Each structure stands twice: as structure tokens, then as C-alpha cells.
Image 1 (tube, rainbow over the protein chains, first blue to last red):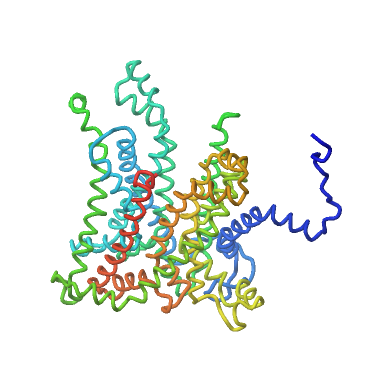
Image 2: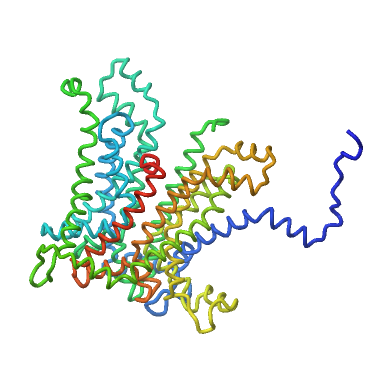
Length: 285
Length: 285
């Protein structure tokens, strides 16, 4: 090694502030863009929350007129709003219950067993996930029209179960793949029969996956507008209520309920993240 | 139980049966009835009869060609916009997120926690004529002083992009997260520049995420009608708006069903092309 090969100190002093600023920009462009994109994602959510405290002059809740908590103290004030929310909750609970049971059974079969017809099963689960909602809604309406079924609460629930099943299968299956079957074999070796093994070992272990599937199904159901609008008849869910009010100006109470749903979902997700952090032992991936 | 012991091969089918039967009854059979309805003629007053009315298809396509191509155009622009926003964002989270990854990911799915219709109405608010976005655009000369953003195709495309961005971002994130960082270091050790390492290593390895994301964004975008309804005018009407109004307002069931079938066929071709590249097993999770 000769002296010439020694690293030369960079002539930092002579760099103009402009090119230093440019270097800074280059280094942090990605971070800057990332934060900007997150701000873009948050903007409408902020608007929803802020305008739940607005005191609109007319029926349109567009411009900021003044702060009030009136809508928060009586969120179900506008006629039909409370009924619509209650209908949505009932639909979502029923759809979640049934789709979680049916979907978990399918996920168990797909992960645990080798059987003929696997490809067809995957296809039947995959296609509803990718079909446009409007086609799902329209085809169910075509079925009910041709059979002369009266549209209402029952048809909404059937439709919601249908589009939730595939999502439940995908979610539960993802959690089942890493499942250690030796634990079950150990239980059987110790004299537990299949029922006891399932309810005491398998179910508790796959419960987080089932819970994740249930939360997803519930949130999909309570949010759905397109498919519901085709199969609702005169029954009104919360999204249908919002749609019917959209032309005449949506009351601020809708923002209150939107904010409440958002708040509950965020709390659940944060709890889930904290739970994962706590379960991961230090040093493990 | 002893019956099951003797016929173990039956177990997966028993697990699958209820869920798949449900999907068959409320997904496959309705599609059959959609096709059946698309070949019917009639009105609400005289009833509908099956007459092999193929002209439902030719009439529907010639009358609504414009809305059809507009849907594909908007969906295409939306998909590209969502990719351009999501890629740097998810890259930033996956490679620079560190221990905050899960929390940052929560920001990406947060829009899902606000009811679809409510977040679209929030965009109506943000883009409204006296809103700060329009004022800023007018100041920058992007919009004429008396110009507006709401009720233009820009507003509709912006709305769709926002609403389906998480569908693009999540699969992208998953594929970027899985990339072995040592591969990129190896490329750099072998004297690849950062740009070259990105183009030759990172980008090809994230291809599955790009493909899944574009598919999951394009399909719902092409069938959407909520954004065109709330953020646009009849001049921005998409095929979803036509299907929705023909089914639910005009009760022209034959043509409405024919339009749904055409939309479905176009999308099915896309799915087949994509699954050839990726395989259903990987796409379904």
C-alpha cells in the first residue's frame, strides 16, 4: 500500500449548501415520499373525523361552520339511522358466524388432507375473491328474481355469507400452515380421543387464525354496499342508508358512526399487533 | 366415529361439503341464472320469458360501448396510479420500516376501517369547489380559476385509486418483505449499482406482488360505480352505473344481465392469463 492509495478526506467544507441540500433530498426522498403517501391515505379519514364535530348550516356537511359535540351525544338522532345500523350489526354477526364455521372446515381440509378435486376446490374459493362485486350482486339478484324469492334480511345474510367464506378460508389457512401436528399426536398418544384432541388442543391453537378470519368477515359484511344494494329489497343497512342520504346531504351523525367503526377497528388491530410483539420471544424472528 | 375410522378418505370431503355446497348454491348457480336472465325478454308488467334473446348482448354492447371502454380506461389508469404510489411506499416500509413495520402497515389498511361510502363522500368534501385542493390547483394553474375538480374524470379516477390502493399495496408489501436482503447485498458486492441491483434483483423478485396487486386493483375498479356516482356526472358513467340502474331502477333485466356477463367474461379472460403466470394456489394465499 502506497500513500497514494490512502483514503482522501472528502473536501466537505467546499460543498455548497445547495448541493448539500440536494444530497439530503436524495438520501431522504423515499422517506419523504412514504410519509406523503401515508398522509394521503389518512386525509379522508381525518376529514370524516373532523366533520363529525361540525355544526353545518344547511343540510350539506361540506364547509366548516363551527365546533359541536351535539352529534356525538345523540348519534342515532336522524330517523331510520339507528335501525339501519342495528340491521347491519345483525347481518354482520350472522354472516360472520356461518362463514367462519364453513370457511374453517374448508381450510382444515385443504391444509390437512390430500384429496382428489383439490384444484377445483381452490378455484371455487379463488374466483369469488376476484369476481367484481357487481357481478356477484347481479347474479344473486338474477337467482332470487327467477325463483321468486322475496328480497330482504334473509337474502342479504345469504349474500354476505357467500362473499365472506373465501376470505375466511384464505385467512385461516394462512395460520394453519405453520401448525405443529406433533402436539396433536402427543395428545392422542396420551389417550385423548379425536373429539377431546380437537376441542382441547387443535381449536385453542388455531383460535387466533379463526379470530382473524372472523374479524375480517365482520368488517367486510358491515362495510358492504354493492352486493347488498342488489339483494336488499326494502331492508336498509347502514351503507344503504348513507347511499340514500348522499343526494340530499349526509347528516353529520353518519360521520360519528363512521368514526366509531374506525375507532373500534383500530383498537382491535393495535391490540393484535401488541399481542404479536409480546408473543415473539426476544431474539427470535 | 368407527365409520369414519374405516373410511378415512371421506373426512376431507365431509369438511368441505357444507362450505362448498353453499358456494355452489349461492355463487355458481346464480351465475347460471345470470346467463339465463341475459337471454330473456320482457318487462315488469308482462313478465320475463326466456327466448334466446342474443340481441340483448349486441344491443347492450353497441349502446354502452362508451361506458364499457371508459370503465377499462379508468381501471387501467387507476391500476397504474395505485402501483406508482404503492411501490415506493411498501418498499420504504419493507426495507426501512424496521420495528415499526406492523404499525406502518396499519396505516395502509386504515382506509378499510372507514365505510367505503363514507370515505368516498369524504373525497367529495375534499375535492369540492371551494375546498383547499381546488384552491391550491387554481393557484398552481392546474385548474382554471372557475374550474372544478369534482364532477370530472380526474375526481372519479382519484377516488377509485384511493379506494383500491390497499389491494395493490398489501400483496406488494408481502412480496417485498419476503425478499432476502442478502441477495441485494450480493448484487452490490458484485459491483452492481443501486439502480442496477434494484432493476435486476428487487424488481423481478417482487413481480408476484405486482401481478397479484394489479389484478386485485383492476377487477374491482372496472366494476365500480360508487365513485362515478358520487364524484362524477353521467359523463363519467362506468359500466357498473349502467348495470346498477338497469337492474334496480329501469328493471331492464335482460340487458343488465347481458352487460354483467360481458364484464365477467372480460375479467375471466384476465384471470386466466394471470393464473397461467402465477398458479391459483399461490394467488389464493
